[in-house]
Image (cartoon, rainbow, N blue to C red; front, side, top):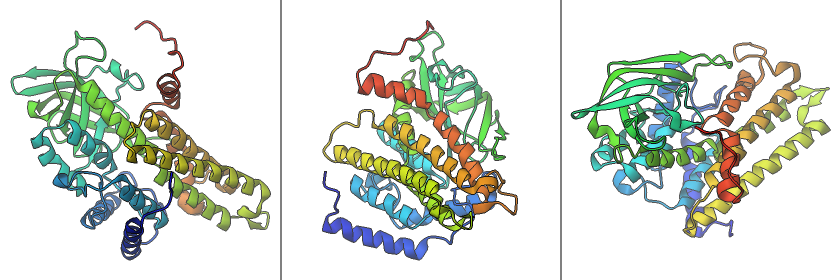
Length: 399
């Protein structure tokens, strides 16, 4: 594995770095991509994504015909790394860019690609995911939301839950049961639903962070054109798995974890305890060193997977490894920040005495949700053990 860049890649890195130096907005108190429910921050996040897209640094790996650059993975890696270095804001349309877009490119129709891909890139339309239900979270195949095909329309009835960003999303990619008599993994279809369709009710769920990033979504006689079916009727499970692999890579973002760790280091250097910066405390230094090793290990593992991709080797269980390692690491970084802050740690962001804008207690609780979402750590460990290490399947009850 050669970790050095070619002369062309070094030139591209300088170009990206110069562009970010000129265009990254000033630092904000809360560096997370979106403050849920704040229209001003949503508008600012959309404007930032449009600027990145106009510069040609968005969805680099997408085909040129669909607004990408047709670039190799190295260029995307360079952009991601430079975004971290520049402390650039996150992307509000990441769900569309990282999950819906690649899925439509792989499984969608020409009309679906032409209709949706351009608006995903420009953040004109934001997406949410309609997978989880009250009785179908980690056991996704248990979903009960029904879609009955009547002529050229599906009529959808059911409920989704833990739907991130549904309160301002324009579209939902959704799993529905279209053949209730088929086996658990058959009879499921993958459809695209316009969130402005009559019959949809969104109820935000206030979390322990005080934010309402998740929602319940109720669907009552919602009419969806048959043209919004992705893939074949009753064959949505295969399409859903393709999307889930992209989600696990997104939740296991190396870039985001590096950004969060950098924020922790800055906190330790500026927050004072026992008469000096917290970073001078031997216990804190040891903690930071342990986390730095884990972050670096994660980065090198990402490069190992990158090498496999460049050589055309299949990714195998890498998405599960990424998801497991980085979500748990993010939670441990937030936990370390709370310990550094001591009695200031639990102060909410609205408390004027809170440090770093009070984001750390929210990050601690939010990152716990990411360990559960997209398949829990236990599920990822099962996948790694069974599919990666060839260990016997976990004993499962009769269903």
